[in-house]
Length: 543
Ligand SMILES: C[S@@+](CC[C@H](N)C(=O)[O-])C[C@H]1O[C@@H](n2cnc3c(N)ncnc32)[C@H](O)[C@@H]1O
View 1 (cartoon, protein in one colour):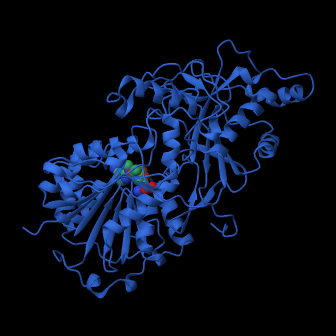
View 2 (cartoon, rainbow, N blue to C red):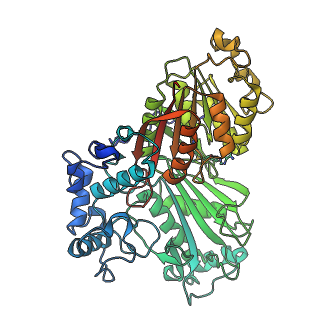
């Protein structure tokens, strides 16, 4: 990576909103302050928006939306709706509809009808319930919510499909001819022939929508511009039933700080006629675009991306800044979808890790190394990241180099196998990297920079302070990983999860293995949905 974006305009940072303090009455978690239960919040503007929503006042971006379908309450009530009186439920359903014309039908924001403060309180309550009996009552900290909980998704995935009864357009290979006709005698497709939007909850039925309350607005504009160019040039959308058509999906990623925009057009075929002209036209319509990639996926599958890619315009990736570090994001990299809250999440995880400058940190399930690199910059003596996806590890190593981080190395391996090997060796991680497995070049391992004590570590020597950061996928970790973690006996474990159910299950293992939960911090990474992220910090018990 050679580009820098230091001179790009910086966006104002959002500060997180908290729901009041957990008080932990009668041995159980008490989820939210009375302010939150009232649906208000003393300080935050974002919640005013939520209250407006509850009272039926549409957000500014949605004011032109009329929604004749939304006269009653939605099909799915979500976390809170069941507890609301009928009047309130109807009012909030109307509010949800005012914010989104397809509310209640699309599989996205099931909570859009619930005032944001109540969403936060319900999420806090849900996390409290999951950890009851596993953690002491006072461990639960107030949830960190968003100040402006709209348009936070920096990654937007839009499928394209033919409308029922749509005119049949030309085959992909004939697209240039169609383009010629579009400019001259009229296109073979109209906008109405091409659907793009969201899938209905639990189905593969596409609900077309031109607005979305949580997607980044530039990204949404890109997806609509692609539809318009497709119509104008006669580029057929993919038909799932027949496996025909050319354009399957657009995946748009927007750098939260940098504002750079990466567009990945997923096509049902290798040949992309007039690709250059397509890029020029797309860029003309959305000038913010900085990179366009073609991803080829010819399989009849629900998996969005194929393996083959071609850069059509720009560098093929974007850069973004997170917690003061710059990260390279390509079409296949895992990158959290809510960058504002990712900073909140990482800040809090690093705070809970309580790094003093002496610790070796294992960043298990490290993805592109984001959190490990932040730890490396903020007090870890050394970081070892491990992830099973080789391309993520390559990105992690490249991110380390790009940011001048020299005390981090990355290993492409199954996290359980890595931990088991480490535990079996009887040693805590030593300063020497594993160059044969590491994506970090050998020269980038700096054992000489490690502490003398680390160099002198011997089998069974647990005098090296060790912290385990872990951020597994939704399914959680494995019993073998957790056993190995307990055998390695790090002083602290910071467990980040987007699925508190599996997290609570795994934390119970760790508690049984000699740890105690010191803090639980829910973080709302996904406003208006049923999802919540949570961080649990555990310390070794002295018994
Ligand atoms: C929730 S993501 C966390 C990524 C990273 N910590 C971040 O915040 O961007 C989970 C990661 O676990 C990785 N993963 C899934 N199964 C794994 C396994 N068995 N061993 C190692 N990594 C795995 C995935 O590739 C993914 O990068």
